Length: 527
Image: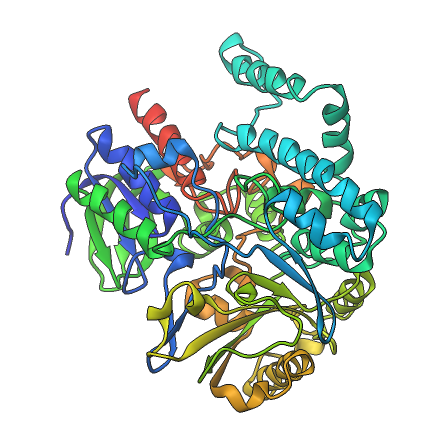
């Protein structure tokens, strides 16, 4: 059975798929969007892990919504939460360091730990904002083409060069120095407080399979601060309506533009005829002819799982198979009968991110085991209680607590798998860790669910459990994302395009890759 021929089929109903479909439909194309999950939202969608209790793998950071994407999706405004607690770091049981996003307030909180660090804090956060701001300019434009030769191809590079020079001499140097630097070295240059350094460094290893001593974690820190306000050292401010507010607004725009949306439908394969994409075949056997297919799934998932390898060059396939994913994050989801109590923790802090690793050494030791395919005995744990902002994610007077855990490698030593006993052992370590800071925490637990990296792959399609769709290494960004030479969202197979987080500009940029991929599709179809 064959459906109507479409101009473009978009695979995936997350932020990138929504942005891509909106742009293509605005250009007058006939677009069909297909999402395997029962509802739209991608990584931001809620998952009910116990009756009445829901959680999202995106946690408290909604990502950055570039203005270009907001305009394309017709989103005039998403209200931020009025009281965002920012980041809190545990120094010891009963002692916490709060780092609100306001630099002056954060400096006052730091002062009891180190007067010298408090004095440096405003300058440090201003430096981070300037460097992340330059990445913003990179991320809303096609990846720079280092092989460009014509004037038309060189113009984008000249524009970026002007933005780079606008940083000023000092920040120009600091940008180039920070990208390959480890967050350990970066923070040693600035601060003396172990607690302060641990809190900031945690953003440089977020979903990253390396510890704070590893080169390139300076870039990871900056990447996750793109779009964050001045003073922030961890992510962007959440929206009042949560990620669902973004999804609802985007879906309404797609329906106004007559995009055909199908959820709960899986793609079996992408069909090729005469050396070009011809259609997609669904699991039901239905075939949908299309002039082009834009996939927001992981590049390896698309190219190695949906396309017959006979249509692609072996060297290209080898490069795709060598994309590093290295998922290392697990989650423990708690259904609680009340908000847990932490001595010394400011009221409302649990609505933000609370990190339980008090030093850089603790973070590095947690990473050591993962190097050998083992789960950390003393993992790095970050907790938040999203129901303090969104009470509808739990029954009345009850709460959800999400514990993000590193390091829990997807690939375990000796060919071991993430079975139930291993996952429960990890959950028990995490529960004991939280209990050390919140005596009586266990008595609050109504239900506990563990999502190992394998569970994240099954539940959300994260290849190897990596929500990034490809590790944020310096050799896997810009024109090298997903693989070197193919950072322009096209593939060697005519009619097939990549527009997910595994493409430029990467994860956490809502709709960024999808919009850029759609623009590439439009350019190619016009030619």
